[in-house]
Amino acid sequence: MFTRLITSALFAGAAAGLIAALLQLVFVQPVLLHAELYESGQLAHFAAAEISAHQDVGGLDPMRDGLSVVFSMLLYSGYALILLPLMSFAEQRGQSLSGKNGLIWGAVGFLVIQFAPGFTLAPEVPGVAAADVGIRQIWWAGTVIAAGIAAALIAFTRNWISWIGAAILLLAPHLIGAPEPESFAGTVPPEIAALFAARAFGVSLVGWSLLGTFAAYFWRMSDVTASAPQARKA
Image 1: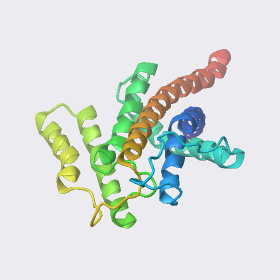
Image 2: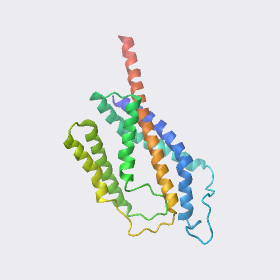
Image 3: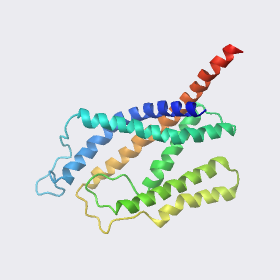
Image 4: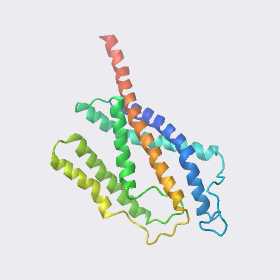
């Protein structure tokens, strides 16, 4: 059982992480590199001369981009090691792990890990004003835990009290509010920051959806593989 969980999670994480990394290289990284031009002072927002919105941010860097791909695959493998045991638990409670259900599990994972904290503490580009990173990490962790418990209450309970509790857990971190800087004095144009946040969310949604789908697929395949020798012996 444990070996089956590990291998299925690693295969699913590697596949989803690879696709997510390629999407990041195409859609997210150019925006990030553009923002770094403002952070480093090579470009200045509201400068005297008009600055083109289309900047040459360079081509592919084998070392940087290769490490980004490896990191993404490792990251999604870690996510899969969290997601797949929960999916297995749900299967033991009578839920089937089809590709469709895997997609739903992945989407819920995105909502809990990415969107719930990002609703108030959005993905940020370099060069924007931000509160202390330690305080933000505490708020982020608390929000993810609250959203995870809320998702479990919605999925595994069937009474209004639990659902009301889930709604409170979802809303509470945002009503409290994420840590904010003393003043907004970032050097990056807001259009770049908004585009980065939108594309980061979009790529994450695709990555998580694929992760859930791949996790369900490899979990079923590992079950078929494990059952085949036993069927031959019988």
